[in-house]
Structures are given as C-alpha cells and as structure tokens.
Amino acid sequence: MPVSGAPQAGCLKRNPESSNVPSFVIPWESRVTITTLSSREFNRDASRAKKAANAGPVFITDRGKPAHVLLSIEHYRRLTGSRRKITDALAMPGNEDIEFEPPRARIEIRPADFS
Image (cartoon, rainbow, N blue to C red):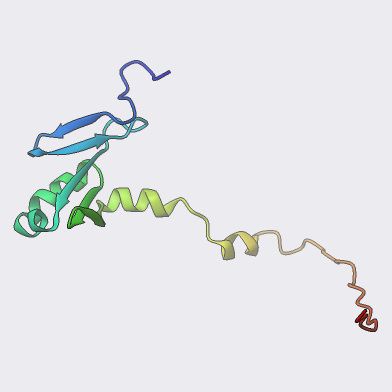
C-alpha cells in the first residue's frame, strides 16, 4: 500500500519545462523526475536538458530507444560515491596486526582411472 502523499509507481507527470515530454516520478524520491528527450531535442536545446537533469535523470533516445542518460553531478556522486571498492575492503586499514594462519592445503596425486 503506498504511503499517503507519495506518488505511486508508474505515475506519469508532465515536466513543466517541456509540456510534450512525459516524466516519470520515482516513488521513493518525490523530487526526482525522469525526463525523456530525443537526440534531436537534446541537440537543439542542451540547456533545457541540463536544467531537467537537476530534477532527475534525462534519458536521451535514438530512434525511440534509450541511448544515453544525463545526470547532474550530485545524482552521479550519489550513485557512485557510496560504493566501497573491493581493494579498500580487503586492505582493512587499522587491522594489520590480525594473525591469520590458514591450514596448509593437502594435494595428493593419484593415477587417472580411464575405465
């Protein structure tokens, strides 16, 4: 059941900056709007695309199919900045004095059975 006042999934809303381009409202972030522009519209008015990217991702289509996504730097950093790199996780800074002695592997050679 949706939270009262929150938009439901699949709720289409017209972007005020481009009345002919529908935008999709993401339910868990009411301030994020996904805008779709054709490549031609993007080439004609890049400043409109940049303004729309401040409200949410802008999908740029080629022949009706999504080809690119334009994000504001804040949205990009939110998507990529919170991820931890595997090398940082394995380095375990501050825990260098942990002793770890894995058991020695026992590898035995045995003749092949071709029957």
